[in-house]
Image 1 (cartoon, one colour):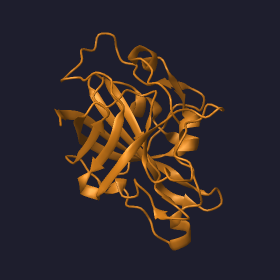
Image 2 (cartoon, rainbow, N blue to C red; image 1 turned 45 degrees about the vertical axis):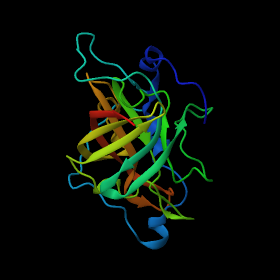
Image 3 (tube, rainbow, N blue to C red; image 1 turned 60 degrees about the horizontal axis):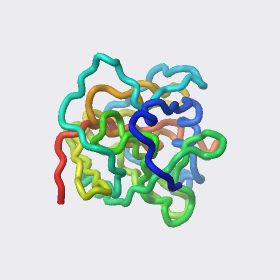
Length: 230
């Protein structure tokens, strides 16, 4: 779960397999919802739609060559912590990568399970493109996890990410949407536009007790509006 941050050009060339992302972001231990009949909040507007077939790569950082960056951009610096005041989230952010089988790594059971994690092949917060931060929704052992209330957020709310260089980036939420895992719009979620953006991802929707996982993913879409140095 550690390693050097790839250069921006390299990150733009890293592909995420659709099936890999969906399979691992959405799974985990037997959910708290199953044991206690408690459901995580869902976004007010639920969006579902067709996604690309499994196995089609989506490039983090791909964008039209003619697109001119909008707004101020920051040099690379990994996220150190995340704060979402409206749902009471304050968490360290730990780097994750890919498992040996090519699937996206998520916080394993243990001391880091209930903390947020940054996919280190995505841009760092403040760089051009979508910085990807994920977190579990719950666990059978401890109940609600770091992103349990992610679906309660809505447009206009702020997410603050402190970076390793001491600066703090503030992102304004554009939308919070839920997608079925088998029709996840990978390019919409991961492809770069022309500004610095943030994606927060967790599980959502009904809990499938037979599979031991949730059926959907909740995704927060946000863009950079401010950066300060403490």
